[in-house]
Length: 156
Image (tube, rainbow, N blue to C red; front, side, top):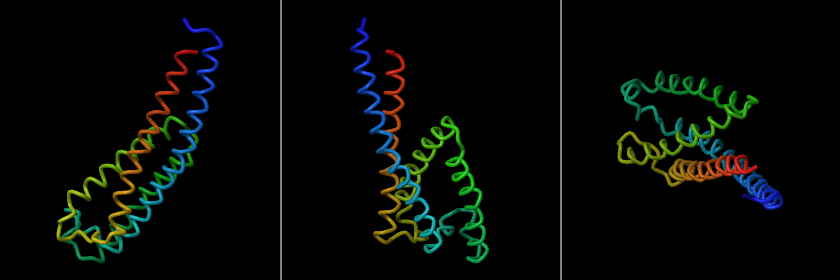
């Protein structure tokens, strides 16, 4: 069906394309994680716990402690998975984080008129919505990477 020379050229071009996608997706992913961490710092400032149904009626001091300490296992899981040397787990985590950030931005948009929403500054909104946009772009790169990788595997 295909000559060996043609397959070789297609595979080489595919390897270059996949390397480029990998090089572009890594800074995107790091930017997404950075924006998420900055948002969580901003969440302390804006008392985001007041928007959570199970924390909104608590006094600020215990709600703050709960909100702060609840992030410890979340950060542990994120850092552990990033340090864990398993491509399958890491790749699943990439998609999970992409979906989370897209959903997170959507939830913030839906609750933008909530009286307890303290994320009213332009900077807060940029941090939240940019992380969702970058997650969408990252998901496209990731999907293309896996699609191309499977395509070149099938023709070889």
